[in-house]
Image 1 (tube, rainbow, N blue to C red):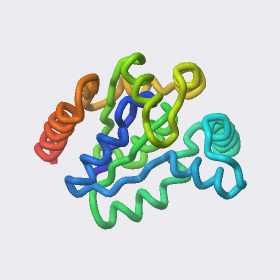
Image 2 (image 1 turned 90 degrees about the vertical axis):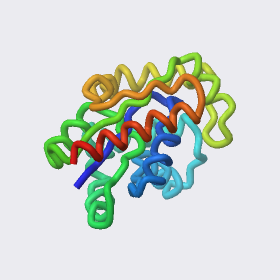
Image 3 (image 1 turned 60 degrees about the vertical axis):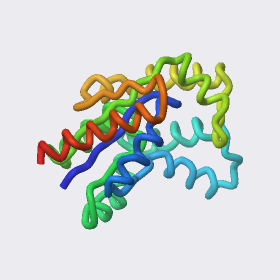
Length: 183
C-alpha cells in the first residue's frame, strides 16, 4: 500500500506532478474535487470566491481534516487497485489524519515554486485562473487558516518547480524511483 500526497501552494505545479504519478500507475484523488462537486450541487458559479466559501463551510462542518475524511472512501477504494496520489493536501490536520490512518504507507511530496512564478502561472492558466491579488489573498488564507506549512515542512520529498515541465518531470521521476526503492 502506498499513498503519496502532494502539497504546495496554488500554482506550484501539484496537478502537473500528479499527472506524472498517473503515468507511473498511480490512481489520482484530487481533494479539490469535493469543493467543485459541492459548488455544482448548490448551483453556484465556479470561481475563487465561491470556492473559498465552500472550503470554509466544509471545514466548519467536518473539521480541519474535512478533505481527508470526505475523500477516505475514494482513497480506500483506489488502494484496492493501485498506489494512490493525492492531488492537493491542504492542512496539517489532513496530514496527521492520513499519517495516523496509513502510517508508513503514506508519504508527502512538496512542490515548491516562488510566489512570482506561481502568480504568472495562475494568471495564464486556462481553468480557474487567478489575478495576482486573488492568488496573494489565497496564499495568505492558506498560510493563516489551514496551517498548510506543516505538511510542506514534514514532506518526505521536496521538488523545486521554478523552471520547466521537463525539469519537473525529471524530479518527479527521481522521486518515484526513490519511493520504489523504499518498498
